[in-house]
Image 1 (tube, helix red, strand yellow):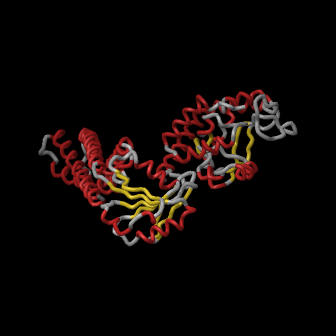
Image 2 (cartoon, rainbow, N blue to C red; image 1 turned 45 degrees about the vertical axis):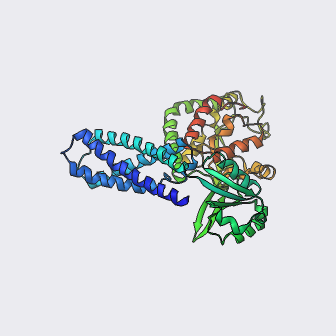
Length: 429
């Protein structure tokens, strides 16, 4: 079975590169009808095919795509093709003085994207037509989760599922025409898993080990250190490229926003100054990403001095000033944190930062509390737009924070920013 899948994978890569080159040349004939600059377009079509081969291989286009939904597979292919397109334009800019026809480029990108998507659909069906016979040995969460997941794939056939290797006749296994033997136990049953691996390691049937990562609340990353596999637990799944995009967006959107609303910020500052005694701004020490402390800024919305005894704000809190009540209800008191975003202490979206004294308290009481500091703190967040702010459940807030980190995407950030304008004032006192 594995050999069949490998052959299909290699054949798909060949077909995809052929499609890239063919659609490049088809676009040339549609635009120029042959003759003009044929040799140039032919040579640079080869360069485009080479770039495509390298980028597609390193863009997860062919990695475990059978197990992703078709929309995710298509999105991955489109992003890879767009990246190839940009790299080719940059390369052509430095390598030649020949101007490439814009009509030809548009034709190529549309045609190549369409045919590459068609290729994905066809090869997906080919892969899914290859049956895989599996024997499962194990018990506990890893084995159960694996079985539940493969049930949705019709090409997987579970020949047998046993809890212990003692239930099997090892001498007959190689006659079963198995594609994989999957071994999965909870961490507490490591000795049982070791015994099974020790016995089965002499067989020619591929062995698959399911590690117990159930205590990893965020996710995990797999690496290789000089031939030794490493599993990093509670690692955010966000890719470096995604985090770079997040930072670029934070900085540029915040800078433009601050310039645009600066007159409004000045008016708020005057209202705070002349409606109550005390400074316009105040800061608190908060804990951010990786446990680093920083000064977080706000417009002052409460009275100063002995009347402010600290603690959580509640509905109709007497410490809140008249203008402060409006600022807090509309989240306008948070606007000075845009400075924190520009400085890199915070992001526009992320888990809300807490004061160190509360962090010390909460980490003892709430499982997973410190893990939220794996991600940069935000001005707004998934917990806040769902109403978990102020004097509400800390446990539910942490659940939202961990869900956000585990499922982060750039578009989730954009969604939360829009939701903040409509739902961000819930439970704001």
